[in-house]
Amino acid sequence: TGMITIDPGFKNTGSCESAITFLNGEKGMLRYRGYSIEDLAEKADFLEVAYLLIFGELPTKEQLKTFHNDIKAESHVDEEMKKILDGFPKSAHPMGVLSSLTSALIAFNPSSVNVSSEKDMYHAIVRIMAKFPVLVAWTMRKKKGLPLDYGDDNLGYVENLHKMMFKRPNKDYKTNKIAIDALDKLLILHADHEQNCSTSTVRITGSSHAGLFVSLSAGISALWGPLHGGANQAVLEMLEAIDEDDGDTQKYMAKAKDKDDPFRLMGFGHRVYKNFDPRAKILKKSADEVLSDLGLEDPILDVAKGLEKVALEDPYFVDRKLYPNVDFYSGIIYRALGIPTEMFTVMFAMGRLPGWIAHWREMRLRNEPIGRPRQVYIGKTSRPFVPLKKRK
Ligand code: CMC
Image (cartoon, rainbow, N blue to C red; front, side, top):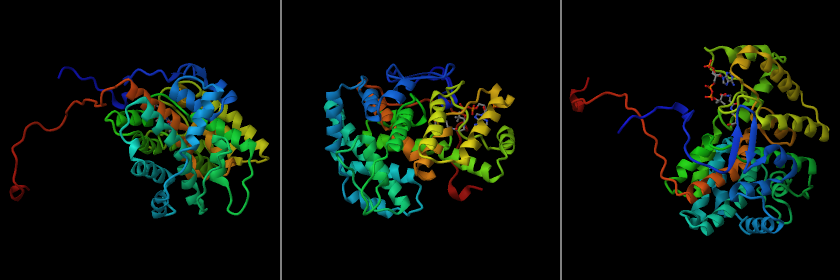
């Protein structure tokens, strides 16, 4: 079998060639298809960025319109799916609900199972781009005990998501430009991040030619963990705990540095960024703006800023090049928008959807082989079998 090099966590192993996202962790630089994240967050909307990531170019007006119309035509989710949602207890974590529903979708859309032509891929892609926001909104409405709602084809993609999430029963939906712009920016910033844990999961699941929807469902499960997307929920819970602890940041810093304590400062550190995460920089500014535009004050934002300052000056964090990551400030904005803490990682999944799709499509179009890492066996060598009655 030759020499096998072990690289736990694939810290130094490239799994593919990719033309989707470039990031330079030393410089804190992130680009989608060559466009800087700062430009995209400021000047594009989420649907344009989704198109860019998936198909490689910014859409023309005509292309964007067609893409959006194709999505609208697929926005109905089978009524039977509501029964599956009903079956979950209200206490269920929304990430488990979302991954289950995403996987269940395939039962109602069997023609999206095994797609290999570009045309069939396109159809599966617009289907999931259409139905995923419905599922996201439903998981939140279930949490909040609100009746399920459908979208409105006259609204933009993100505005429609906002409507489906927030429309109150028996009341007209009132659009909210500040909230929609903030949501748009958050989704763009989360839209792709090359070969992270969930994206690698989507690629490797799809590499067996399992379909797009189930590959995405696997990605959602991978994203759930607190070391990955689940960090945004963990950050907010940590900031709340610090606030309730009279703002005692030093206590949490000491815990984070204590090697006998498994606690980590949530929202800090990154596998690739050894400098500021450019997304965190944009979100810190955005958190300030959104709170002020909405006329809100949140003591948690002050806790976050205080904690960031202390950590950035602490030798432990300086030596290890630990900076705030994308999850550090996002929760403060979600909270200002009225999104419950347990839904934060679902919002991350909504943003990451086009990135996952783009990687799945790239992997299939490049005809990549099935993902199948090797190992070095360190268990027992050959042993004689002992029958059950003779075992001690
Ligand atoms: N608090 C305290 N110590 C830390 C932290 C932290 N947040 N992050 C890393 N370290 C220490 C770690 O203990 C290790 O120290 P030592 O060299 O003394 O053993 C050193 O820094 C390197 O850490 P690592 O665990 O080898 O690095 P990694 O690349 O395997 O892990 C990470 C990256 C993001 C999982 C990790 O930094 C972490 O657990 N951060 C907290 C969770 C978090 O915020 N996750 C969100 C990541 S960004 C977006 C996303 O994926 O959702």
